[in-house]
Length: 357
Image (tube, rainbow, N blue to C red; front, top):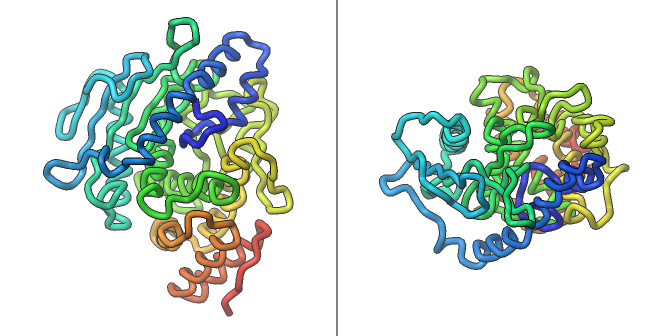
């Protein structure tokens, strides 16, 4: 699933490609099962693209509204309803994690940006846990991923060898739900640099949800995405490192080495990963962290607002240069210090922009 097609998933294709070459037959089989599910997800995504407003449920009473389902190891969404708004916790930790993290993401966008859910109009947050995928022989294996399909979230349980259950990570949930926010705003084309910006903004607001929830300043944050979904090992720390792209995992026996560049001089220009949408997102990710740390304090208070306004105003085919120029322009309206910090951050990753005196 999520291989060579633009269903937004937290585990990128370059990791799946690596797993397909594993010496472990069980690991290869699970990676192949991911690919077998891709056709179904492409059809679901295309349906959502053609008629999104007809398929978006909204809160019946306004405000936060969540529905959590259980796929029970199958690939049919949404599954069986197991928890809805105002209901207490259940015995299943995956249900509670997905429910709570979706709520924290809603609360973040509402409190910081006055945004009422993903669409700004009270869209119900729908999620499904324990999602499986066909193994090609009539059986099912747990999904090694989490994804946003245009209408809802879906979470796999991992394999307990490389991946743990994907509901464990607040920034993963925030990342994926931010793809939903983008679909109702800039709707950045999921290819090349615009696609990398799409992934970048999802990482930015995924990490900001976590920082806001945990009251972490820019200096205190580790800037790691998805650290809770990986089985701990000395060779892996996270799915991505926003501050130091290319270092999230190193010489790992299953994952290999993180391919993300941190500078335009190393921009990936191939066709894999929809033109490097997950790979090249490391470049703007690092620019954001540099700006956030330069300005200090709570990243959601200043730099987060600049980036939010930038995300909303970018054209759908925006390139890194356009993002840099627009973010500096928006920062300049805040003040010269903010504009200089943002411009310098982009310059440090090889994207030139006007420096305000």
